[in-house]
Amino acid sequence: MRFHTRKRRSPVIIIVSLIDILAILLIFFIVTTTFRKDQPRLKINLPESKSAEAVAQEKQEPLVLQVRSAEEITLGDEPVALGSLADALIRARTAAPDRPVAMQADRDAPFGVVVKVLDALKLAGIKNIPTFTQPEPEGR
Image 1 (cartoon, rainbow, N blue to C red):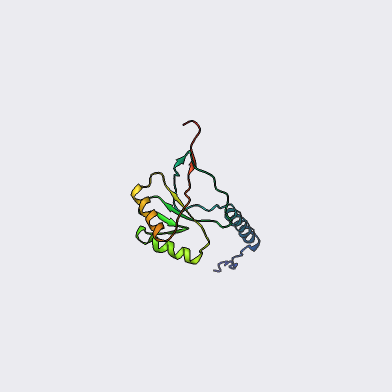
Image 2: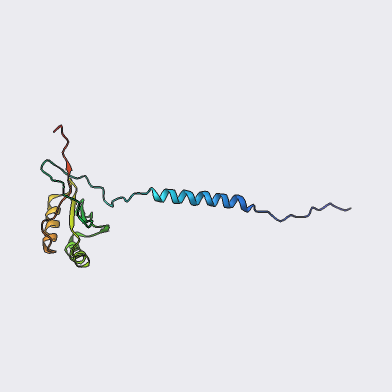
């Protein structure tokens, strides 16, 4: 008795549809990365101020020191421990001596931590540091 055997066909991969899918993925990744905004590492609620003055934009972008708590301090984009903040400020100032330093302190940051940060700034030789605030709403 003879059984009919089928010839096995090798699988066929349709390259054109794969190229279409890769092109769509490439477009998706390009579009999503162009709309991405720089997000700060710390979410800071700036305190409100009635007497704050807007400062003219300087030539160089300031190096921003963000203070949220004793454990959450960043200098630029790098997290820094409170104990080594003065050394990090000195290194940043020697790397770019003309770059200004500005401070953002959260309204809920402990006052003792802000005082220690101001002491570290004084040890690093930085005086007259501008701080970021937000305007107080009109209804108050």
